[in-house]
Length: 156
Image (cartoon, one colour):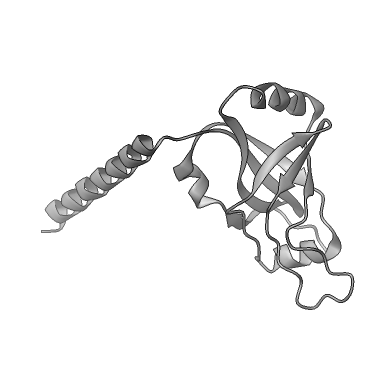
């Protein structure tokens, strides 16, 4: 069987871009068991409450929900277990230094398959204040209204 090519999106954390200012992103591998991979290939995962921590020089993805594989047996995985993230040493050292700064956290933005391997897009992020969220929503709504007005002008 030929190896998969390209990028296939499994899930996104849309809430993260609303809740945080994204400062930097990293692509990292993830250590999974067999039934987790099968569940992901079926497109079933949830990153809404997930976050990453660095403990003992290793990165861990916590609270990510990958439901049990329906065809699995007693070898099924635990849905919310901690999963190890695979990063290069220099990226890990940079993240250790940055997360010690106040207000910075590691948030997963998306999970996808790249050339057959499961990957997580991890963001170094700073939490937004409530007024920042309101401003972002107002700008988005203003841009949408302007686009709507422009399309009406060209249509008729």
